[in-house]
Structures are given as structure tokens and as C-alpha cells.
Length: 580
Image (cartoon, rainbow, N blue to C red):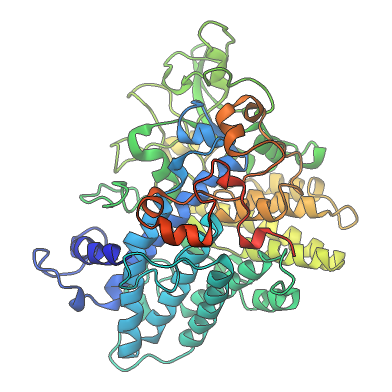
């Protein structure tokens, strides 16, 4: 990784010395950057940005593997993932964002912080490093850890077990350092922290949540899985949504772009995955839509349905009417042979069936938003051409949507799972119910803060959820203590963690079971490429190593994973996914 370190010192220093936002702005000559002079408070927001992008990219793309979303196009990357056809498009972005954009700066930030006694920055460096390496171990199984940012051009690989063990130590060190008093004259964490505004209490709660999440993910490993320790961590993690860490994004015109992805740097990570080239149209599957409209067959709609499923305006006999899209049935052949019509660009498309034009595909509304800053649209409604009918996007995938990083709702669901497995049904049900309500409140916070008035007021996708709908759902759809199941807990957690990397991790460690109504996509069974990569009887378990490692570090990679280039490497479980 020595190459990466040299590269990052040059390029990211230039980035850090260019004016982008209040957080990404320093007053130095951009023509003569010096890494030695860059302060820890300047490094932190860049570490946060690149780590956030790495996590956001993998989180967004993994939801297609999970069968929550699909695409109009069967041959683009997302359209392939939705039918369990892996592509190399999954393999590189998170790796580059962490190792090139983030990793070396974490090392520099930590070393400088320790030398100067800026303990809160040292703590942030260790915690963010843990987020990144756990992400990579979850994706690839094995990865250089000890030599990742060393002088070695061909760093040795470490096992997932090693990475997890070391990251848990780093989390503990972070918690210890957050409790220390900074040396006199060192910058307050608020000077560099673009996520929590320097709130140490939120950082500590974020650390305890990551620790609880990590140990809970080791549920197949008896030597590491510790329910009592998980519950102890959760008692010190988020206790309400006021403790959440959520990243606030902006929809503004930018003069600079991410040097790795060429995406805007202030917009939401989920939106960025749909931005570049407007290359595809994403929509929910029937599985996700059914969960939101008829959970557990109770016939009571989830109040989040209007906010997660996208809407589009149509001309109905001369009157403009908003209609909510339906889910694409991935258990049918609706996308065969060549995908769905790109209905969003059809000016006069309607809710009218036609075998010749596939105008009936207009019932599938793509989850895509416009942008005031990037596209120059009047608001975040998406119109491919001015004057054409707009679509709403959803609450998670707008350029200025909050990115939910560490939440009370996740803490509740982890607690519910642990307690349920212990047979503590009463306590588990309370945690399950609290988790659902917390996510509703987290989304309502977004909906009451952003997208107010004007054209937004006419579309049901915007504005807070109605209390009457919340009450009807909580009282009539989620079930009771008596009929609580692990499948209900995990399925509701999936909804609350939508677009999170946690969802695919959970699905794998549960062997794709304990998710209500979930099935393999039908297209998989007739797709030769999918069947080659994931033979029948096996499951999607990991991401193949990216080409940089295969092309330039194959000897070290082969020493720890000799099957790294096999067609079916995607089915090899990562370390924590193998039961004792």
C-alpha cells in the first residue's frame, strides 16, 4: 500500500486545501501543500467523507443482493445484482475510497494526535479505522491489516478473525481516549467533526454501538459471541434518537468533485450511487413493497411506505395526480428478456397497459431524485426534461437526505435479537417495538426538517407521517409479544436499516432465513452467468477481491485465499459466516 500513501499525500492534500464547504476548507496556498502542516482538525472531515462514501457505496449496492431493489435494465450492474449475477462493479469503489481516500489520512491523524495530546482526534481515528476495516473484512473476507499502510508494496494479508480482533481493541482504545482531557492548545473536536459537531457523548455512544454490532455479528462464533457484553455495550450506546449520529448533506453547487469517484462531495452517499451518468433507474421489489404495505398479512400499511416508495405525477384526464409506484415482482418474468421500459422519460406515459410500448411499466416508479446544485432543477423532483412529469425519489435517496450512520433504532433491534434468543420475550418485544418507533421518528425528523412547502406540499412522499397512521400500524400490524418471532425482528430491522451494509451482513449470518417472504430471484435460475458464479445450492457470501489486489498482490492474496480467482469465489463464506 506504499503506492497509495504516496498518492494520497499529493492528491488529497490538494483536495484539503481547496475550498468546498465550511468543514472542507483551510486558508493555505493550494499550490504548495505540505502534509506535515495539515492539522488533525483538517484531516478529520476528509477521513469522515471518504469512509462515509466507502460504507455508503457498499450499503446501497448490497440492497440489490438482498432483493429489496432492482433496475429497469437487466445488464447494468444493479440490474445484474438483483438477479444474483455478480459483477466486478461491486469490487472496487469501497476499497479505493477507504485505502486511497481515507486510510493514510487516518494514520497521519492518529500519529499527530497522539504526539500532540489531541486525544479526541486520536480516538476518532481509531474508531473510524475500525468502521473501515470491518467493512472490508465483511466484503472480501481477508485484507491486509498490519501492513495495509506500511512501506510494503506487497502487503501481507490478514484473516477476518485477526481484523475483527484488532478492530475490537481499537474500539476500546477509542473509548478510553475519548475520556481523556486534551492537551492545552489542541483543537476541540468540534473544529473538525462534520458529523456530531464535536459532541463526545455521541462519539462514545457510536463506539459502543459499533462494538455491540460487531460482537453480535459473530453469532456463529461461540468463542467470540457474548450476549452479556452486547447488552452491556447497548446500555452505553444510543438511548434515544437524540443520540443518533446522522450525516447532514447539502444540495448546493460545487466547484470540486471527489477525485476518486468524480461524484459531488456534499450530496448524500445513496444519491451519489445513482448520480453518475444517470445510468440506471432503480425501483423497489415487490418483496419490499409487500413488507411496507401488508406486513405479516395484517392489511395495515406501514406509515413509512409513502416515504420509501417513490411517487410520480401523471396526467389523469387533464388533472395532475400523484401515484405511488408498485414493486417489481422478482418471482415473475416481468423483466425478461430485456428489462423494463424506461418509463420515467415518457412524457405522456400513463397507467395504461400496452404490449407494444410497455406503457404498463409506468406503474414502476424509479427511486431517483433531482438536484438543485448538480442538475440545476428547481427542487429535488426529478424531471429528465423540463416540463415532463416529475418523480419524487425517496426519503433516503435525495441529494440532501440525512445519512443514518449510528442509530437508536439499530441498538433496539440488536437488543431485541439477543433477548429473543435468550427466551426473554417480554423484553425482546419492547426492544422490537422501540426499534420500529425509533426508525419512524428518525425519518420524521428528516421529513420535518427538509423539503418544506411549495411543490413538496402536493406530493405524499414529503412531509411527516401522520400520527393516526403511525398508531394504526404500531397497534395493528407489528404483532404482539405472544406472536413475536425472530423473523419479525430481523425483517423490521431490515426496513429500519435500509441502504445499510448491516442488512447483507445479517442476511448472510442468518443464511438468508428469518426474513418474511424472502425468496431467490426467479431470473437467477435462467441466468448462466449467475449460475456459474453462484451455483445452485450455494449462497452469495462475499465480494471478490478487486482487480488491484488480483493484478498486483496476487502472491500474498493466494497465500491466504488460494481460491481468490475461482468463478464461484462469491460463495466462499467470510470468517464470521462459518458456524463453529
